[in-house]
Length: 388
Image 1 (tube, rainbow, N blue to C red):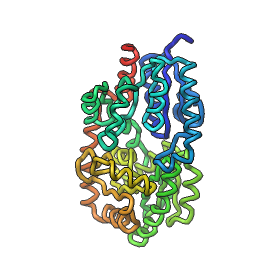
Image 2: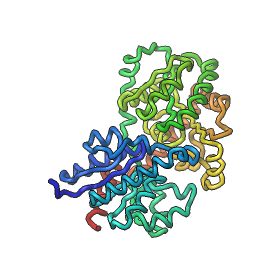
Image 3: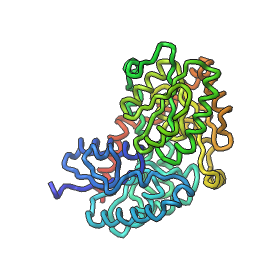
Image 4: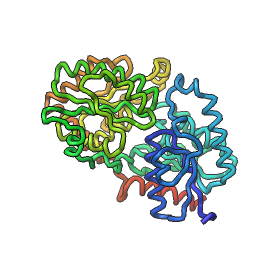
C-alpha cells in the first residue's frame, strides 16, 4: 500500500538500532500497513528498513572524537534532511544520539512533520539549556526513566514514560549450560563478563584499561575466563585489543550468545566489568554483579565535569541514589582500584548479594504501567501521529 503512513526512523548507534527494531515490530503489530524508512543498523534492516547510509558513521561520542568527522556528519545530516523532504513521512522518530538527531529536528522543522524523540536527552544531568531548543523542535519525548516526564512537562514539552527497553532485551533469558558446552569450559573455570562498548573511541580507551585490570585480577582469583561482548560496529578493534589478555578471552558477537554468557556468568557466581551506560541495566536484568569503569578524552571530561549536575554516571546508581555498583571514572579508573572492587565481588558473597538486591530494586522502577516498553512507545507514537 503506497498510501500507507510512512514513519521515518533515525538511530545513530547499536542501542538505538535495537530500540528502533522493537518499536517497528510493536507498531506493525498495531498497524500492519505502516511503512518505514530512515537510518539504522542490522536489527532495523531485519525489520525491513533499509538504511540511507551506514549507521556506524554516526556512532561518535565526545567533542574531540566528533571533530575529525564533522564534515562527514554534516554531509550526512544534509542527506537525511533532503531524504525526509523528498519522502514527506507522516512522522519522524529520532532515537537518542541528540548531537545528530536534534540538529536534524531543527533542519526539518519547516516541513511541519511531527518529531518524536525516543530516549530523553539527560537534561537533568547536564546542559539544561537544551530543553528550550527541544520545545521548538519536538512534538513529544518518550522517556525511559520514571522521573523524566515531569521535567519535560514543566518545560512545555509533552512527554511520556514508556519504560526502559532493557526490560524486554532478553538479557535474563540465556542458557548457561549451552554457553559452557559451546566453549568447553571446565567446572573450575568462572567466566567473567567484559563489556567495553559499541563505539570505536570507547573500546580504544577502555580495552587497555580492562586488560591491565584483568591481569592483576588473574593473580588474585584463579580460574577466571574473560568473556568479551562484542558489538558488530567495533568487532575488529575488539579482537585486536584483547590479543594478549590473560585467560584466553572468549568473544561473543551475537545477541543470543551474549545472553547465554550473561546466564553463565550469573550461574557461576561471577561478575562483570563494563563501561558506563545501558550495560549496567543489562547486568541488572541478568542478575550479574558488576563494576563500572569509563574514560573519555581528557578535554571532553573536563567540560563534562563542569557541566554535570548528578553524582553518578551509572543509571543503576542514579536511580538508586547511592552507589549500588562501584563506578570508577577518568583518573579514578585505574587497574588497581577496579581489580580490588572486582575481587571483593568475587570473594565476598555478602557484597555480591547486596548488589543483586539493589539491582532488583532498580528494575522495579523501570516498568511502564500495564505493558511492555516497546508497546507503550508504539502507543505514544501512534497517538502523536493521529493528533497531528
